[in-house]
Image (cartoon, rainbow over all chains, first blue to last red; front, side):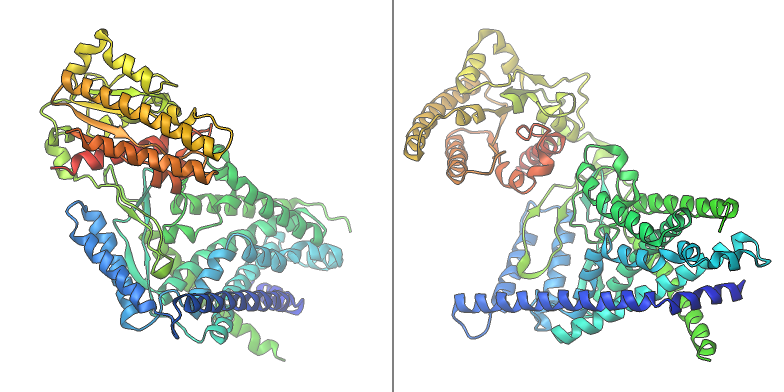
Amino acid sequence: MVLLIQNEVIKLLLKKKMILITLLLIIFIGLFSYGEKYAYDINIERLESISSESEFDWQGISQQQLEDLYDRLESPYISENGIKSVEIEIEQLKYFIDNDINPVTPSAAKFTVEFIEQGIIMFIPLLIVILAADIVSGEFTTKTIKVLLTRAVPRWKILFSKFVAIIMMTSIFMLVVAILSLIISYLFFGRWGFSEPVATGFSSLNGVLNTNNVILVSRFEYILLTYSLAWFVSVVIATITLMVSVLVKNSASVIGVLMAILIGGQFLQFFLSEWDLVKYFFVTNLNLTRYLTGSYQQIEGMSLNFSIIVLGVWMIVSAILSFVIFSRKDVLV
Amino acid sequence: MYKKYIWPIIVLLSISLIVTFIVGFGISVSISKENNKASLGVNSEDASVGIEKNKVEELEVVDENNAKNSPKYELLYDGKPNILVIGDSIGFGFGDENNNGIGKRYADLIELDTINSPVYNLSVSGDEVKDLSLIVNNLENESLIKDMDLIIISIGGNDLNRIGYTDSVDLEMNYLDTLNMYKNELGEILTRIQTLNKNAKLAFVGLYDPFANNEQKTKLLLNWNYETSLLLQDYSNIVYIPTYDNFKENLNSYLAFDQFHPGPEGYEYIARELYDVLHSLD
């Protein structure tokens, strides 16, 4: 079995798919980093020319905000939860002031998080689809399926080795995304920013944001959290891709079908609040990282647990279907 | 040959990564778990840092211990309050599930049993201030108004909407006429209510902008709200419930299907604002 997996991994590597998606990644990360840096510089320039000072006085503004927050703490109308939220914001702001960092300054870690938060719904799944699309359908086009199936190995083992190979490569790919994001954005921004505090731990109660359990974590820990969620999403996408790859003999069609579903699914987001069924579709549940940040539109009944369960069900059903279909399929090559 | 080295590296790397990611995944889930305690209102704030800071939505939290000992309405009223809602379609609750509206939702927030202490409603969709005046002066409603502990008023939106105009100067002139007429009528309505009932708390619901596409009209609406709150200063025991700012920020979620009246979320917000304002005045 291990040999089978090893075989599949080597096949994946030799097909150079990993290299292709890594290249695409480098291009996009480069573009986004550059864009952010450019926008930031323009903003600073503009603000400096308005205030006609040689250097942008963010300290003054941040100090002012801090004082506003302290004032709010002393208001007689503030509630317990309000105190907690304000204290967390004060902590965050103080960190930036104490370390002499402008709170909006982009840093490598910040970019890495933003990149995955943006990419988790479409860009990363697309790359995974490219990686995994021809894992089965490719064997049909090159007629190597004959060679594969005439071996004395049960069919399910063959599919399983492919499945494991895909999972392994997906995991490594997530690491590649993280490292590339960090390195390339560091080249542009010059700051790591791992220790910057980030607030997370939001949950929802009756459709309203609940800040009872909010904690501050470092950016580094936050990267781990968001990338773990992204990894989960990638694994689910990879499994669904596997299923489509089993069903469709043409690799290009696999990519096309999945792209259509991913993109079309985004449009379904608009119906989330009216049409209940939409929230059981896997595409609308891909955006797991937004549950961590707490700054999103609450949809009735959707929470991190809910999305994970929906994705999990889609993954299990896809896996079962793949194995059943592949085992019984008539291969007439 | 490189097959010998690549394979073990890949196995090691992928296994350690998978373990790391599963752990990270578990942590994310545990810190985002839903709170199962039965709190009613929650305080929420956007935790973005720095100069990109924006809106804040504050809703009051309810102390659960208090709830177990005595129902919330006793914090403000002696015994079960009688609640009356008067005015236009927003008072009526048009756009809300079962036309619940502000009155019923507020009653829920203070844990009032609306089966035994029903929320009274004399609102009529489309009513303008002159129609409200007729209702308040109607002898048939006298004893009802006398009995009330809280009266929620929502009026003026239809008056403002009906201002006709041909150009912006025309608009300003007509606006001033309508505003003056409205202020006079509203003043008389409030006087009438307080003559009948000295002790009831009054609450006036401010106007929000469902269209947000005409700067001049928005400014007039803001002026309307301002003049209203000024007028209310002349009366005692009355509070103003502002809705403009928060509706502006949450237009998509607060409005009903007709994109004009509030929807359930919008009414809930107004009820909570009412709760906040009334219950912080101790």
